[in-house]
Length: 270
Image (cartoon, rainbow, N blue to C red; front, side):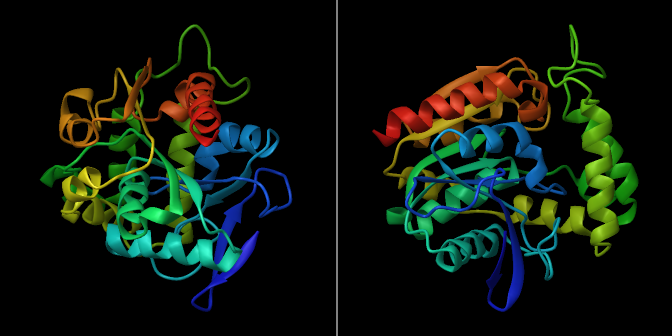
């Protein structure tokens, strides 16, 4: 589904179902150099089991037009504009990595509009190493290769890929390459810079009133569990779920992630 946000096309994947504003809505927000497709299993299940789904392509990513936003705050405001354009007053927000910061900031900007908050592969501050930041600016393909290696717990998932027919690492690498082809304006560097500069996370976390779920990968090298204490400490009522995966936990452990998300959505929406 394509909607107009401030005169520019914004793409929202609905999980193969027509949008129905009468149902509860789940908004899925991807991370850096990605698009809505990173949520392929989770979004289709939600859409076919009682939820309205909006899996967003952020500006400059995937099928959404316009230039990429340069700050987490601008991306959060854009998500709220999408809600306005679609006619959704309140939604469960689910974000991965950079997307988790966007969801967190959106809940700070408009707490009445976020019914539940799920943050996957998150941390705060979400600092990017100087070496990776420079590589994303000067050699995007090298940065893609670095992040792809760092984001997965192994070259091949054992005992086999959890999604038949899908090469997890190859698919992730190709998706990031496609984002570079769609938007050659240093997209990875723009996204990483936004994560690196975001400074409102602790304040936003301390103010979250709604139910919160954290999902962390036990083998995550990008946002390791030891770095998450600021957020989990600030949101003492948040539930923590650990899955046996790296940073790309939705692809490496799709069923475990789906089970945690859907159980949280059902329990906290009652």
